[in-house]
Amino acid sequence: MRGKILNIEPLSLLTGALAALVGWSLLAGSLPRPWPAALALALGLALALGGHSHGSAVQIDRLAHASRWADMNAALKTLGCCGLLVLTLCCRTPWPPLGVFVYTAALCMAGGAGVRRYLGLMALPAAFVLLSAAALLWRWAPAPGGLADLPLAGGWLVLDAASQALARLVLARALGALGCLYLLSLSTPLPELLAVLRQAHAPALLLDLAVLIYRYIFLMLDTAARMRVAAASRLGYEGAGRSLRTTGLVYANLLGRSFARARACQQAMESRGWEGQIRFLTRRHPVRAGHIALFAAPAAALLAALALGG
Amino acid sequence: MQELLRFEDVSYAYEPGRDALRGLTLSVAAGERVAVLGSNGAGKSTFFLLAGGVLTPAAGQIVFEGEPVRRPTDLSRLRRGVGLVFQDPDVQLLAGTVEEEVSFGPMNLRLPESEVARRVADALTAFELTEYRRRAPQYLSGGEKKRVTLADVLAMQPRLLLLDEPAASLDPAHARQLEGHLARLHRQGLALVVATHDVDFAWRWAGRVLLFQGGRLAADGAPETIFADRALLAGCGLEQPVLFRAGRALGLDPLPRTVEQLEQAVGKERNTP
Image (tube, rainbow over all chains, first blue to last red; front, side, top):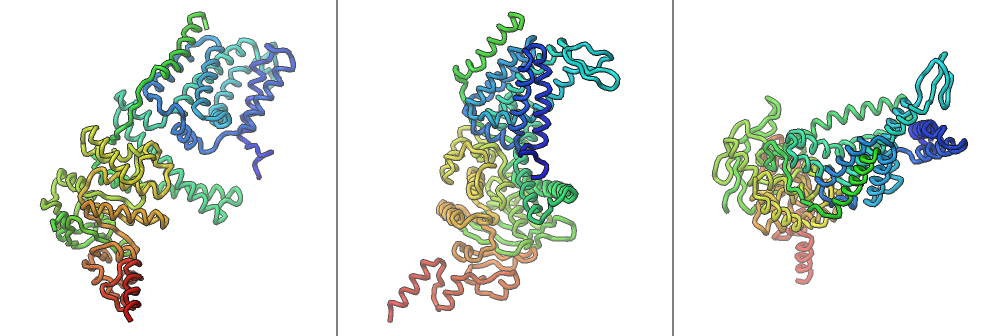
């Protein structure tokens, strides 16, 4: 197919190259010679071949519904993940946050996420995280003198030990925080999360909007997919120019249909007695000691690490 | 029979000067089975939205259970008593799981939570949805979604049920299943009003037919009378039901409503020399 090299998508290729650069920059000087380059190459290839996942909103939702942890009390999960997240951000060395990442990723796998899908979903924020890491690692200086130097525009791009240490910490914290958020979103269907927010007295209007947005994401994706298939069957995507034009038409149509549908949906809600507030009877999941331990144990470990200067 | 719903000279327009419904007068009694026929844009859906308390008449009045519907409190009385099942399930489905979805109506009735839970469980059982109760509506098939929308409305325990083309986009097996559910609801004493394009279904199922044309009620009567009027049907772009024509051609009386009745009638005639 055009636009793909060896069936790798351009975005994945970019992420992979970026990962290799950042990986090498993080390790240069701390490991003997061939290792930084070898490890960086392995990381880059893994990300490039792993690819980013399409339709990630739908995928996250499916995984959340199917997760082994879907039955866990949602308030406990929310509190636990947020607590771990805050502790992760307080860490002053990279190892504890990396531990949090590994732990939360392992919990996701135990919940049934699957390594490949998990990495695929990670590839999405990875591009942002890696870009910021690259910016932290390399700085422009008038003279060389770091662990590695590249000539640029009359000066030098310099990688030194201090920025390396900073980038390692920031990257580790970012990974740990991502791990916490992914654990929450891959194990908790959104309706349950909204029920928790309702319990916490979040503004009703905001939650009603979230309910509607959540529901209509799927309807819009479905409608858009159908329109795309219909357009493709009439050769609407032959060539770049026509693809762009067709995409524009599809989105313009989607807007019109959304308005019509919004009116119909409101009528359906009114016919079922809706008078301004969306309320459901939500199933309650009891808090279990084993589930508390899943969050209490890593939190205790993090607190200990913090006390020891981590 | 006790009268449930009465329209008295009701008109409605979505845009000024273009009436979607004009001078509609009719009444529906408890336990009736009514088929509503008419081409697209004939006013069927507007009739349903008015009867379901979603729209309010521009002229004329609606009477529900003997009391005219005037104030907003009357409107909510109408919405409680009349259940409306929309043609497209995706318009109606709202919640993240099937059981939450079904609880939406009863919660709006401000019932105690134990009562809501009981009604949800009953509605799910009635439509064989218990095993789907934790599933998200977006991952259900068309037939399953249709059943959820029926359970949605039945959990509110209405006395009159309006279904807008319920069999549209259902495969034959699910359409048969739907007819089974309709038969059960009828036995439970619910009045059923079904908008449809399927004259064969109307002939098989309905005790009364309403024929809409250009925003007016063109005819209201027994299926035998309405389907005998070819000119009227042709004016609405409809044809006579197959079994009706077959029965007429064979000179049967009464006319067969189902294939089984036809077979029985023909078999009897063959047996008598």
